[in-house]
Image (tube, rainbow, N blue to C red; front, top):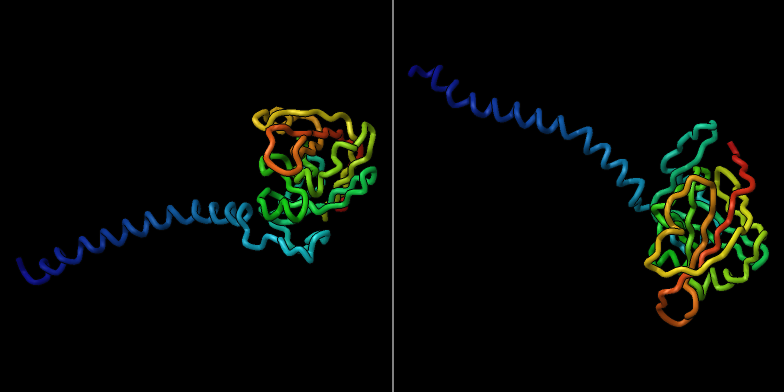
Amino acid sequence: MNKKNAVIAVVTPFVILAVCAGIIGGAAIIPAEKFSKIAGIVFSADAQTDPEKIGEIKYVEKEVEAELDDGNKIVYPSFGMQYATLTIKSIDLEAPVFFGSTEDLLQQGVCQFFGSVILGETGNVVLDAHCNTFFLNLDKVKVGDEVVVETSYGKFTYKMKESTLFKETDNALLAPTTDDRLTLYTCYGNLLGPTEDRLAVVCELVEKEFYN
């Protein structure tokens, strides 16, 4: 074997290895970018949990803006972000609404079940809070009482339709629906410790106003 052929024999395996690595790396770019975007939406490090900022809607922290079939636009918030305010005048309640639920967020306001639809989408918007804080008087909401949830992109008005008790293992009231509704729920019957009982207040959408 001459010197030239010897060099080719040595270099060729490294060239093939480099080409293969480039192909594999290129194929991984698109999935990695998609995962990065999704992770950024769900687990954003910019979650607003500062107690001094409760009640302030974060207009500048849009994660993903989407257009509905009717042309109106909504904003998908990041996990832990305050993106709405809940008002129930009949029980003198005005509270921030955070997207997602953790014990820290529940100490600061009302939390939206991560598996429920975003305000403005068709379906079941599910909100919960502790029974000894923000939802202390949830059982006093009566049929016909007005419940308003306002975001940076719209205002959604509901009327209380019914209330019911259920067990924590029963997820029927928290499941997706084909109608527009708001479900508020909290622990029931024990303000000092754990309980299996839950109180749900189901409201129907009566008016929606988009700001765009």
